[in-house]
Length: 69
Image (tube, rainbow, N blue to C red):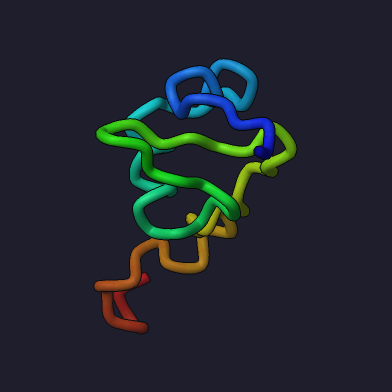
């Protein structure tokens, strides 16, 4: 069997909220995560998924008209 780590221990090494880790597992964003009862088991060699939030500021003030900026 593969080396698996409970989902509540993985955030400590990754710096991520445990709830966020469970959500990423449920969405299939962490490769190899397996649900055992109510907990998620994550492979020891699993990498943190790419952060998909926009950080470029591209959407800043997107509701304003072009002339109002």
